Image 1 (cartoon, rainbow, N blue to C red):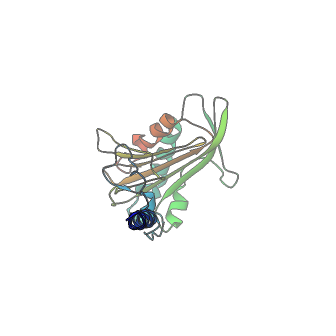
Image 2 (tube, rainbow, N blue to C red):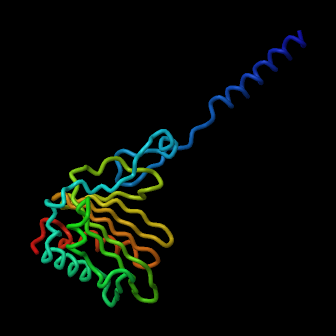
Length: 206
């Protein structure tokens, strides 16, 4: 009898170990504030994505292909910087701001502004990309988006904030997509202010 019980207990124990190996505990789902749908880290390895530019407008459709609009957007960007901040263009750019000529020569119709910003005692790089897209915000990707915020005017902000980098992607209701990426400079709130600047939107008058 005792030997039979021992065998049964041994079988149960082995079965429990095997079951544990075959059914490893799954991590708790990642919850991202403001996101109704979140693509979990374990799901990312099963999805093949071609990460390409989201600008899907023809160059002839974007208003910043014109000098006046590109200039107005540059003024709006500079005005959205923190008070007292200074900005210098990248070495390969004559000035800081959006370049209508570069837009007209592009394939995706996106406008880029790159520079070195000094705000207070911090200096770092700022990259702002503006494009047109009819794509919805879609799900949030764990590890890529830390928070999603929908503004009163319908603008959706995807926020990523780490020790040295703050990035905000704003999708406005007029189809404008504004990607603001600050490294080593600017706070999360300051980056959000830039992404929300009305003058960066396609519908803003030049």
